[in-house]
Amino acid sequence: MSERRAAKRGTSQRNSERRRPQPATARRVTVPESAQSPQKRRDDNTKRASKAKKLKLFGVGLGLDMPFCLLVLVLLTIGIIMMFSASYPIAYSTYGDSFYFLKRQILFAVIGIVCMIGFSFFNYRIFYRFAKIILAISYIVLLLVLILPASNGVRRWIGVGSFTIQASEITKFCIIVFFAYWGTKYFDKMRYMKYSFIPGIIVFGSTGILLILEPHFSCTVIVFLLVLIMLYISGMEGKYFVFIGVLVGLGLLFMWVTGLLGYAMDRMDGWGKALDYTTSEMWQTTWQTRNSLYAIGSGGLTGLGLGQSRQKYLYLPEPQNDFIFAIVCEELGLIGAILILVLFGLLVWRGITMSRKASDMFGKLLGIGLTAQVGLQVILNIFVITDWLPNTGISLPFFSYGGSSLIMLLSQMGVILSVSRTAKIEKR
Image (tube, rainbow, N blue to C red; front, top):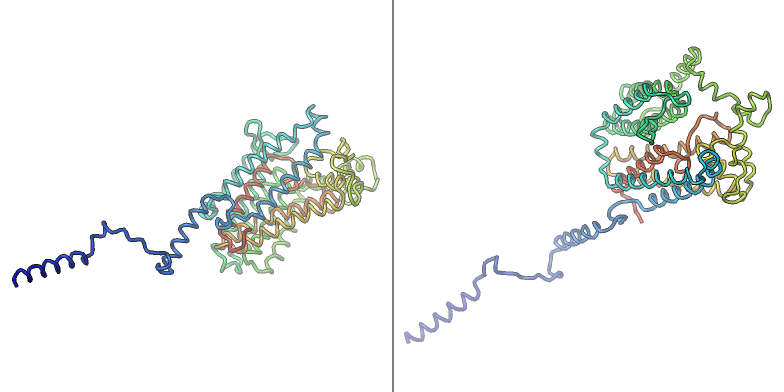
C-alpha cells in the first residue's frame, strides 16, 4: 500500500515538473503570424518597410518626388543641348574651341546634381534655425563685392580661383529662406504692419541699396518681387501692397533725381523700339534685342532645326547667356518653345503643389518661394528677349550659361526635394 502511494506521488511530481514553465531564456516559441495581434503585425510591417526603404534612392516611401526630379533633369538636359547649340560659334571665335562652354557647363551641372542630391537628404528645417545668420551672409557677400575690383564697370562677382560666384544668386536664396522663417514664426500676426510691411521694407530696402550700388537692377527687381510673393503667401493684407508700391515709386523718383538711376536709364534706351531706326547710336544700342526678335521670327512654327540657327553666328551677342531662348525659338520654332514652357509650367505646378502639402509651415513657404523664383525668372526672361521689358540681363533657368547660377539653382531644387519628403502627396 505504501509502495503504491509512493509510486503515485512520484508520478504526480514528474507530471507537475513537466507542466512547470521553463525559464524565459530557455523558451523559444514562434507564434504564428495569424495568431499575432493586429498592432504587432503593423509594427512588424513598419519595420520591414523601413528596412526596404533604406535601399531605395527614389522610393515612394522616402518621400522624394520623382515627377519633380525628372522634370528638373529633363529641363537640365535640354538646356545643356541648347546651350551648346547656341554657343559653339562664339566659343570657337573667342577661344578657338567649339566645346569650351559645353565642357564647363557639364562640369557645373555635375557639381549641381551632386549638390541637389545632397540637399534632397538634408533636413531643410535647419534653415529655420539659422535663418537670421543666412540673411547676414547675404549682406556680407553683397558688401564684399563692393570692395572687390570691378569687372566691365560692375561689381557682382566674387572670384575663387578660376571660378566666380555671383553674389546676387546667394542673395535670392537667403531672402526666400529668411521670409519663410519670418512668415512661419509670425504667421498669425502677418496682418499687422509691424510683422509684415515694416520687416519687408527694411530687408528689401537695405538689400536693394546694396544691389543698386553694384549696380544690378535686374536682381533688384527679382528680389523685390520675391519679397512681395513671400509676404503674400505668409498672409500680409492687400492694403500694405499699395503702401509698398507708393514707397517704391518715391524711391525711384529720388534715385532719378539724384542720378542713381543712370545705369538703369541707359539700359532702358530703345526699350520697345528695337525694330525702329531713329539714329545710328540707338540702332547700335538695340542691336542685341533686335537680333533676338529676328531669331524668334525666323523660327516660325517648326523652327530651322537643331543647330541651324543663323543669328548665333555673331549676330546675336552672347547667345549662350540671357538671350538663349531666342535661339531656342529659331531652331525649334513656336512648337518647341511652347513645349519647353509647358515643362517649366509643370515644374512650377508640381513644386507648389507638393510644397503646399508639406508637414510644416516653414516647408510650405520655403518650397513655394524657391519654386516661384524659377517661374518668375522664366517669365521675366521671356519678356526681355521679346522686348516687352528693357534689356536688363535676366538668365533663363537651366538654359543660360553660368556656373554659380546653375549650381545654386540645382541646390535649391534639392531643397525642394527635401521638402517633398514630408509632403502628403503621391510620389510615383
